[in-house]
Length: 416
Image (cartoon, rainbow, N blue to C red; front, side, top):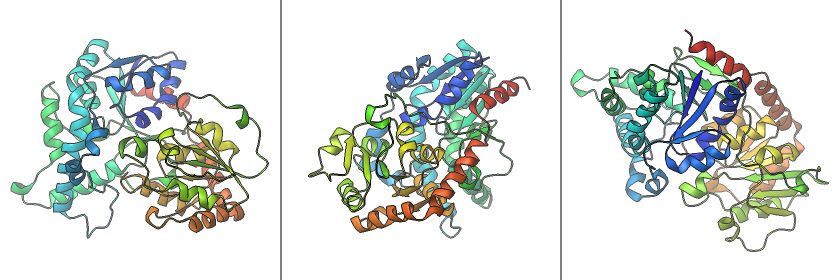
């Protein structure tokens, strides 16, 4: 069958799609990736055929704009009933539809639909914010599935929004997502339905202890998280186990690129880790390294090292709580000290779930100091329950269907 992977041009969202794309290729299916031009080198670098659609969305630049900030502060992780009023949800949806989902999707609708009508995929796999993809799939009669990159807060907040909207008088009901997506879909002869929001099924990489409550009627297809971090060259020094416990420090790429920097002070993290008898490997872009003064003697700074190669050598990790980083660490049974960036809506939720599972400890970035870092990592190293919990999550992940298993399942989906 022909399978199209569609994603707006966000590198981290694409990377999570690669193992399934290659599983489908290895099973003999034709695979193609469609995104805006900005993703070309990343997708082609993964060895996958790439087709550019539309124009670049420049969301990273827009998200740093002060005007956008007022509209992008909708906390989709919020779950307190007293906060989730109709006015709160409506204003939040207005903001994210206009400033996020329209921004990344509108530039690609026409080209993506045209590509689907020309290439005629049997299946379209899309990441959760690429709403142009299910429209394009239905416009050409293809099956389509949504592929998550984190906990499914999209579906949880959608359920709450629809419930609150149903409580309003008919004259006061407003659905910004349905209004925008329905108008776009109608151009191509597609009627709006909630299938355009959730997909015909949803691919879920997060192990069950780390999932959030979602609508019961949605079909989830579990798949084992297989780390893929992009170009991977393993340095010589990483081939042998260290003499002291190794701590991996990874704060992700999205914050540095999109938000203009980290929400934690790297020097403070290194200062805290310097108090311990450990070896530190910190992955930091050159721009962040340049901001540092003296570097502790137990720290090695590298611009990039494949995290899936670093993690197995670590006794613990210090991370920002991003899903790719967290799941890569857990895939190797490594406990983590997490300092989540509150501006990334899913990250505090995932970090909290990791802590609840016993596989990590959460530190508020606003209260971070060297002593807190040292104490947190010391606890991870000395209390075996954290490593045991991380390994238990690894066992859960290992028991999930592989991408190859899911490839077989998806082939059956297109025949039904």
